[in-house]
Amino acid sequence: ARGRRAEIARPGRRVDRAEEGRRTGGSIVLGDIHATVADVDGVPCLVGCFSDVTELHRLEARDWLLARAVEQAGDAILITGPGARIEYANPAFGRLAGLDPATLVDASTATLGSSSPREDLSAMWQAIRAGREWSGDLIHRRPDGTDVTAEAAVSIVRGPDGRVAGYVAVERDVTAERALRADHARLVAAVEQASDSVIITDPAGTIEYVNPAYERASGY
Image 1 (cartoon, helix red, strand yellow):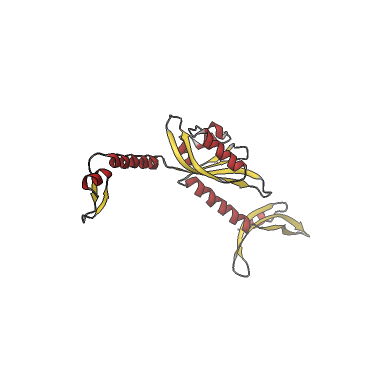
Image 2 (cartoon, helix red, strand yellow; image 1 turned 135 degrees about the vertical axis):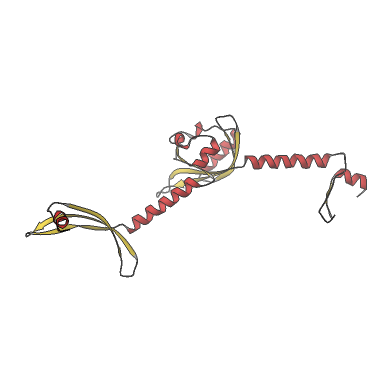
């Protein structure tokens, strides 16, 4: 231990370390210490500074949590710069578009496969370039040729000066949901137009639905 103290006390040696303490009120303070051992009148002394990095550590922890939340989100998230070049895509967006998110960074959004009607894309860009948020459907064309329908919301990200710093799109795959809804609509239309009578009751026998053919046949 004595040898270790002598090593630390050697003039010219730097000391860099992080320390945790408590303020008078009991709150925790985190500090970075940067010091140099100097010889003052033959006495080794630490000459340096203490920086309160409590807020910095709090912000770093918040940023880490935010990054993990976006990374693990179930919704697809795409972030671009003001020129619509992709800066980030989370894994869910990669699954939605059928692409490796890492390969999208620094690419233009124009390189993303799309089957969306031209007028829908034009309306989206017109809205966000006018400073408004946009929501609607986007149809992604995957590399294998399949189309994926997503409910999307595109928002503007502004910098401290109020200028547009980029855009963020949050999308949800509704392909299966829309297909199920379309199947249901076709079934309803088939029952409504059937020439045979159709009557639906609950388990107690209470009538819940009859089609037009039943109404014609029964006179009700």
